[in-house]
Amino acid sequence: QVQPVESEGGLVQAGGSLRLSCAVSGRTSSSYAMAWFRQAPGKEREFVAAISGIGGSTFYADSVKGRFIISRDNAKDTVYLQMNSLKPEDTAVYYCAARKGKTMRTIPEMYDYWGQGTQVTVSS
Image 1 (spheres, rainbow, N blue to C red):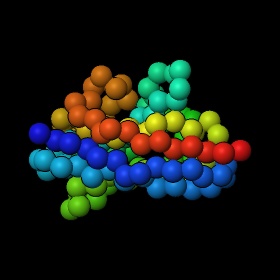
Image 2 (cartoon, rainbow, N blue to C red):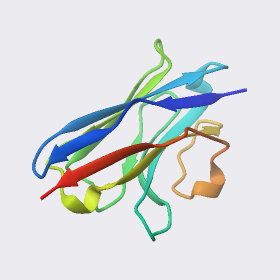
Image 3 (cartoon, one colour):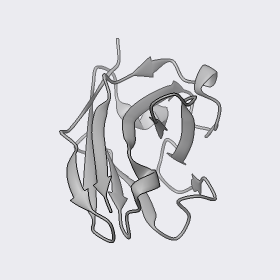
């Protein structure tokens, strides 16, 4: 059983930075593509960024491209999301997800394991 566990989020001012981490327990995380999704109040869960199993490929939502960076350290079974130039519209609960197989996907239904979510709030 694979269980992603996100680090604590936080409150940050607009323009600031925050790094989230996701520790993946269970089987070797390099066998899984990983992704971050987010969900704001009253909105559907949306894709943020994904990284392939080995970590050689990444993909970003247009809304975060150039500001967020997803990375992974398979030796530590951990995935990171570095968030820079944060905006109030980035405020949401952020979820880490794992998908069997090494290819990235942007649809939540394609992911098999989910973390509990962590709140990120960006003040204006």
